[in-house]
Each structure stands twice: as C-alpha cells, then as structure tokens.
Image 1 (cartoon, rainbow, N blue to C red):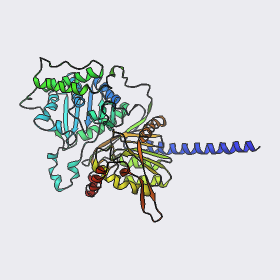
Image 2 (cartoon, rainbow, N blue to C red):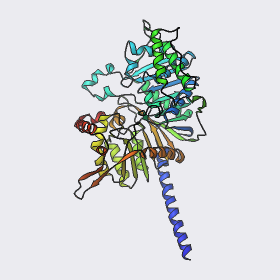
Image 3 (cartoon, one colour):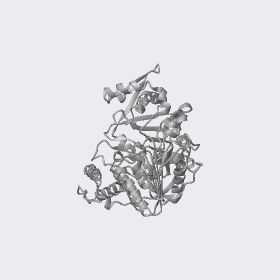
Image 4 (cartoon, helix red, strand yellow):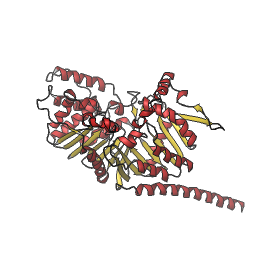
Length: 499
C-alpha cells in the first residue's frame, strides 16, 4: 500500500513537470505562430552552420550551382582570397547569364567602394547587363544629417544574405573574410560565429523582400561602368582568385608561379593568394562536402528590420515577445551586449518570473570592440543585481565571439545578424531566421553551452545595504592595461546610443 502511494505521488510529480514543459513549449510555440509580418514555412529544410569551414563550403556550393539568380548583401567583403574568390564566382556566374544583385556597406567594405582603385573590381562585374551593384548609405549622400541626426550617417546595412535561385538562403553572423571561414586550427584568432542554411521558396521570398527593401532604398550609390576602362584587367584577377580557391579546397594544390600569360601585377597577386591559401590546411575537403547530411525540415520564418532610414522593425518587438513567452530558459549568445531599455526590461520580466537566463558574450580579452566592451563592464554588475536569475559568461578562448543566437525554452531558435545593442535595435538594418523545433533549438543550445564551458562566469555578492562586491569579473582574468583602457572609455557614455 505504501509503495502504491509512493508510485502515485511520483507519477503525479512526473506528470506535473511534463505538463509544465508542455505549457512552456506551447507558450513559445504560440508566440512563434502569432508573429505578424511574415508567414512561416512548416517544411523549411535547415542546416545549422556553427563551423567556419563548412559555412564557407555551403556558400561555395550554392553559388557554384546557381542557375537563375543570386542576391547578396554583406556588411564586410574583404579583398583577401575569400572576398576576391566570391567576386570571382560572381564573375563566372555573370558570364553564364545568372542575374546578380550585390550590395555592400559603405562603412564595412571601404576597400571595394573607394573610387578609382577600389571600384575597379566591382566595375568589372558591371560590364554584364545581368549584374547590378549598389553601395549602401555612402556618407556623401547623407552630409545634411550632420545637422539633423548623426545616426543617419552611421547607419549600416548589417544584413548578411546569400540568396540563390529564390530557394537557398544562408544568413547569420559571418561576413566575407578569412576571419570568419578559416579553421581555428590554422588561425587561432578567427571568429567563433553561427550561420544557418535554409532551403525553402517561402523563406527565400521573405529574405528576398528583406534584400530588396534595402537594395531599392533611397540614398544608396549605384556602381556604374568606368567610362575610361580599368588600368589593369581585373577580370583576370577575379578569375584567378576563383580558380585558386577552387583548386585549394578540392585538394588540387596551389598555382605554379609565375604565369607567363599574365602581367607582373597579376602574378604578384597570385603569389599572395598562394601564400595565404598555403596556411589553410584544414579546408581542402570540399570534394566530400554535402549540402545537407540528413537534416530535417522545421517551421521557419525570416524577420527583418530596416535601418534608421526605413520603417520596418519586425525583430525587436518579437524578440521581446519571445522572452515574455518563455517559462523556463533563455539562452543568449551575442558578442556585443549593451542592453537597451527594451531589452533590459524584457530580461528583467523573465528573471522576475523565475526564468533562467544565460548570457554568453565576449570578455575584454576576446572582444574586437573595446568601446562596446567598456560599456558592458560598466553594466554587468547592475544586470546581475537587478536580475538574480541571470548568469553571465565571458568567452576566454583565443577565437573572438561573433555569434548572434537566441534560444527560447529550447523550442525556438533565432540565428541572424542582430546584436544586443542600440545600433542593432535602432540604427542598422538586420535580419534573423526564427525556427520552431525542439531538436533544432536543442542542437543550437548545446553548441552555445559548449562555448560556455570555455568561458569565465562573472559573479557578484550583494550586501545587506544593497552594495555590490565583485566575486569574479572581467578584471579578474584580463590584462590590466586592457582594463585600464576600458575604464577610460567608460567615460564616453554619450557614445552609447551609437554603439
């Protein structure tokens, strides 16, 4: 009889916890389904891309197999072998008749957007009637904003979108540069970032709308053909960059230089490509790469936000709504945590409800933004004091954290470009992919928790009089010179709305 009573009691407890989990899932599921502004595809095929090399291979694959159209927008496109080979890929596809639209940001991609030398490379692509290229929000188009709103000058296109044949989409935190695609075994200080690959016409249409609303916005600069022609044949540079990358990633080796049929300048460039590629020993297995490896389909949608020059913001309010819907856990991985009033209020409401919140971000020794980190080290104690259910972790590996990911009750996962700072909330254009799936969200959460294992937890002690004592903080593990510099930068609080 006693055993039966214990069994019944245990069963009730198990059912109660199961019910709580079901309610939690139902709350975030309901929130996901009720998001306005875009429909979701219940059968979008997804691949999680947390690893640098596979993320590059995925881009290379969908671009190389493009048949009809390519739309690309990036904040940063560097003139290293990654940026040049991607442009070389676009040059190849332009010759095949694929319709191409490319937009780069005036602030993030300065090298390619400068007149005379920089634009020569982009002008090589514009020779094709099926190619359009724009530069987002160049400063010379917004000089009157100096007397109106400085944010209109600083506003960037922070979207990262590759859209192919209106079917395949890659978005996330990565820009086009070696820092985002090289294996950490080859360069220890590359970025730790996250992308997602989506195969879905419906989701692709949403990404296409996000692309077009910024591409067609006023104030952008249209790249035109050079009336006098290029001083050097940039077409050869692009074709060689494409071929050099393709040879290397497929295990075909490097070019033998010098090449008699090209100029001394081109040979010098090719030698630089060879030197760069020779150090990337862990990215030569593209021949065995498969775009999907048994991945499943899950309900997914795209949410978009215009820059300050537009009106759309489907991201901020819906992230707050998902935080409000959570019953158990919020996991945030973000490189730049400078909480706005709205973000802070949403997290406090969650903490007050008893929701466990994990914030994984950069430490002073891993961040690439000292000003952002300065604001964070001035904030973190207050966050922990006001929100007892929040835990904060600072990354401690040589790699720099750049991943922008949210997981809600391990049921909804968000991967995109949106940082936890005023710039993303109020100034820049942003885009995110939102997925409803326990298996996918759990996969994303586990990867973040693996990163948390390589991090310092920041802790405080709150005394009876309300004063805060640091138990372990950024200054406990960081170089004193860096901390001193951050403490000085904290005095620049007037810059907070711009970072």
